[in-house]
Amino acid sequence: MRVFLKILAWLCKVAAVAFWLFAAWVGIDLDASILRGGYSSYRDPAPDNLTLILEIAGLTALALLALLPNRWLVFRPWLFVPSLLIALIPFCKIFDSPIERSDLLWMMSLMFLFAMLPLSLILSFWRQRKGEGVGYV
Image (cartoon, rainbow, N blue to C red; front, top):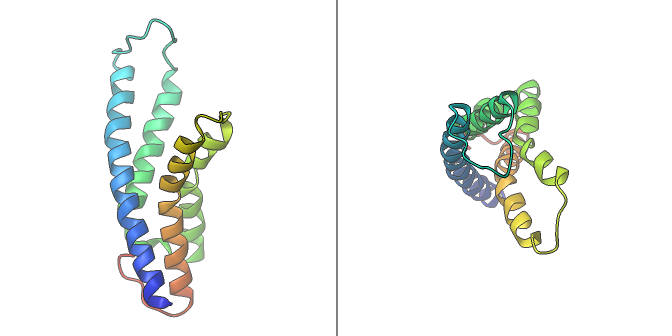
């Protein structure tokens, strides 16, 4: 069982690192171009600067959280809880928006990708509490 949890934690961490680095790369580039004034949509108004800055900060925090070794994040409960709460932030956007039937598969795949980082943290925390040494994951 321990080997299975370790392999599952590694797979989740690798998937989370790949997803959040790509999301940060694309999202920060897009938000920064909007902040510079490169927003060229005539239908929708440009979002306010505070929203864009918060999105950039959130993507940066999630990318850094994905890159940090789990042993640093699960060492103490007072570090684990805030890092888990930060990892759960993307779910707020999913549950905040209305879900159409045609978007259900898309939303399920996003929920699967968003769940990789919290799942990796929870598995590492669980393994660490059972006395097993936690390395990177």
